[in-house]
Length: 290
Image 1 (cartoon, rainbow, N blue to C red):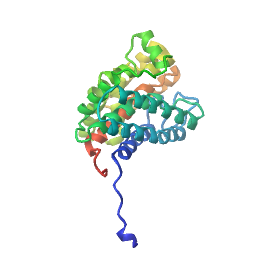
Image 2: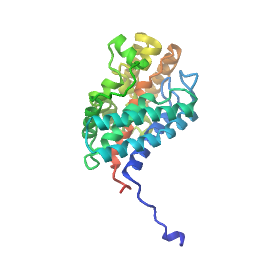
Image 3: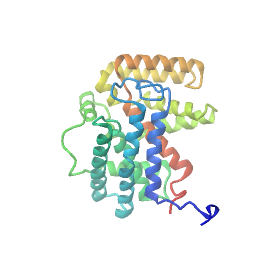
Image 4: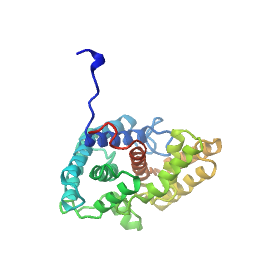
């Protein structure tokens, strides 16, 4: 067959959603300069992470995201069967991630957040506004998984200790940090002509201003959390990451959080969720899919 007659075959909905989820994770990892997080400059506050590992981890999760979307299409409704199916798939995805990273936790929180959103989007692909997808994800997150392991994660332990809202509660509330802070700031910075990378940095900072990030609390306690929240707000108040003054504040925040060993990994996961929902809203999940 002549090359000019070759046509790209449309991909399945599950493939499309898995692609979008992995793209969001890679875009989050590549975004620079992020305060105390792995990016193109270095490993931030993490001695055991680097950008190549973050990429490999994201790619290892593609089959899990695809399988979650396929489960949603097959089961077709928010119920305990679907909740337990995606819980199982998520745990299997976590094991694949850990095998890829030699045991380093790179994206455990992201599996939970993006997995719920991918599943919710696949349930009703014609109804893909960010509010509708987030609401379906919240309904899923509120259901119990009888097979979930009982030991609490570090994030859950910290949430209990400090009375903070952990990743589970964030999802159960419909991702307020994304819908009320990340996405609005992303759109605001774009509208102000700040450029895509600066808009994404501003979205991350907006999430950081109010999030009780359990990763920060675990590594640096309340001192680290206050430094993160106040520092992020100072960057935005100075004009955001697109301004010279904002960049200076961002550099100061980066250095302060690294000194405290306080890496805002929870905010990074929610930025990835923000980027995923933004892509679903802007491009639609049916584009290029059956």
